[in-house]
Amino acid sequence: MAAPGEVVSHFLPYYAAVMVTLYWATGGMIQPVLTDVSHVLTMPAALRATVIGLLKPRGHKFKVTAKGGRRDRVLVQWGMIARFGLLVGLTLAGMLYGSLADYTPERQAAGSTAIVLFWSIYNIVVLLLAMAACVELPRYRDEERLATSEVVDIRTAEGSFAAQLADISLSGASVMGPSPGRPGDAVMLRLDDVGEIAGRIVRGSADRFAVAFIDADEVRDALTRKLYSGQYYERPRDVQGRRLFRAVVARAFR
Image (cartoon, rainbow, N blue to C red; front, side):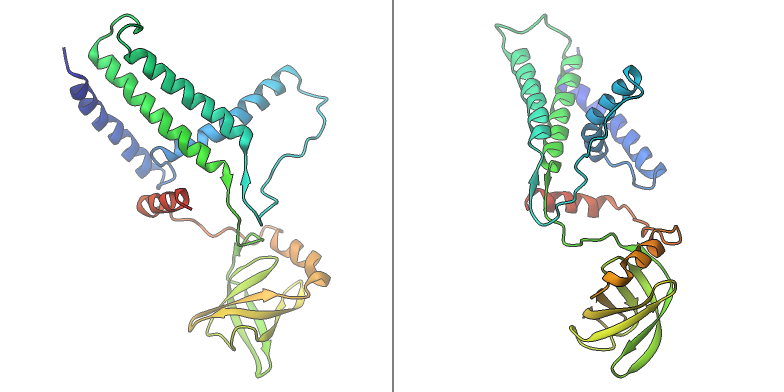
């Protein structure tokens, strides 16, 4: 009979090979452990909506759900944390019950016991990460940034010039090119289908500077129609395992 350590050592290479293949085939979109965390977070709502839709397809009242509208403070989803904490407790209780000689169920092969132990520990790790994700930290950007290569006219106190945008949002834009002034200096941007928007430089470098829009309420409707008309897109994300792991570790200790 194989020892538990031997079974796990034989099982882990197959699991690692599957995860590496999925990571490569999806361009890094499937990450070990983290993909399971995302499934755990969304599964309760998806299952509830599926069951309700099958039993009662029509006649539901509209219900507003949390969509991250409060960005200025820490938000804790206590209901979800309690649900995942209960599952962690049940898993630990099952592991403890199975390890007590006086109360253990009928003895099983060492190989199957090792596999159960491995997946129990894996389950606890996934649930703990899901609980950490239920704590929403403040977000420093209020609006979504959309990538673009549009050329705009920029006017400053010293003159005007044309430059290419790197990205734009309802609250500001990032411009490719050397900064025409120091942080705090006023600029005017002319956008097609919107008109002139006043702004101020918030940061700059030799090849890019950022502008925050000010007094843009009069053109906000036109700017909203322009940004969300379909001609802009989110900046593609290059998922890298090492950077993602470092970000998860940093997020856990914040």
